[in-house]
Image (cartoon, rainbow, N blue to C red; front, side, top):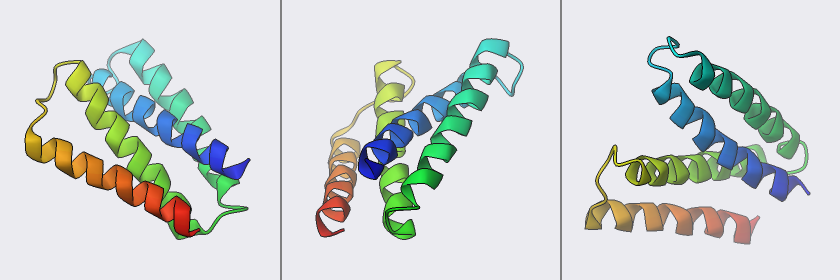
Length: 104
């Protein structure tokens, strides 16, 4: 159960990071609300996962999922370009997250 909560919390990290960028310095209300809500839920999920999983592994998996999904969302929203190098590095990051899960 802790792994599932951790994965969902990582997804919410991408949501709050994207909403933070869209909030325009907290000037736009809806993205600001989404940022605050998703960040709180994401942090609570991370805290829960850390009660059953090692702290370092939990944090690395949470950040990895959030970073990859945030980058993918930026590409899908045409805010960033996807290069061969970026694709390779994001793939490596996904591999590292899977590796951490495998050895934990």
